[in-house]
Image 1: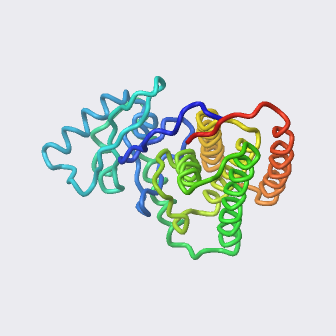
Image 2: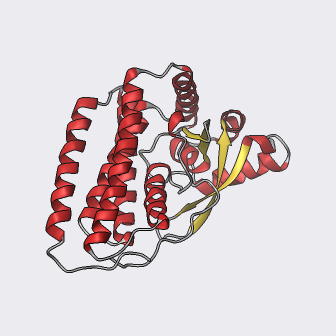
Image 3: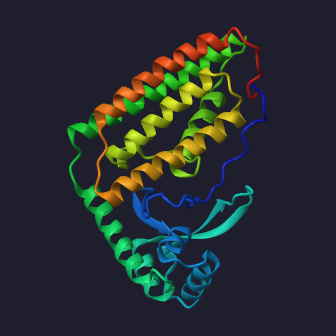
Length: 271
């Protein structure tokens, strides 16, 4: 299954590039947005947003506690500069951004921060606890599937193999490979993470190499986050029963795929 080994993860936060991804997200338990999201929401070129933010940062209008330098990968896979903002930084910057959607963008940004803060202060529900347990159980399945797949190919599985899969899932979920604070996630976010874990198990069972799994899982993560953003904008909600049924079907399919692929051509996994 060898298409090349995974590269080193970026140390800085990567903002999201999909147009449907939520405007505000948690980073280390803190609600933040980023310059790409603001550019998209306000209808402004990203380089113009960066220019405005650079000016506000250089004259001290936005303090060093309210922003963080960030990177993202463009369509050619090249790292590009971006800026991540806390709620305070974003509120200060909004009047200076402008753009054709400036007024509606400011309203949506404020509403997004308010909604996320309310979500963080609400007590954890039974549904959240269930989703949290399912995420843990599904990651165990990912690990088991990886070990089974490598055993079928006559290989052992070491700690760095499991770590690579965890980093890949984290990247598909949040845009960076760093560990995820699952206790800070909402129930819908946990459902997304669970579906990513199910997908990861299926891709391993299919015998895909790391680079193939990476491309498929990152695309799937963007799709899931886009679906979530669409539901939030339209006032819709996830159906946990439908998600659970789909996840169970995917797990059954992945197990069958692993058994069937053992009869095909063996591939080498990343070392």
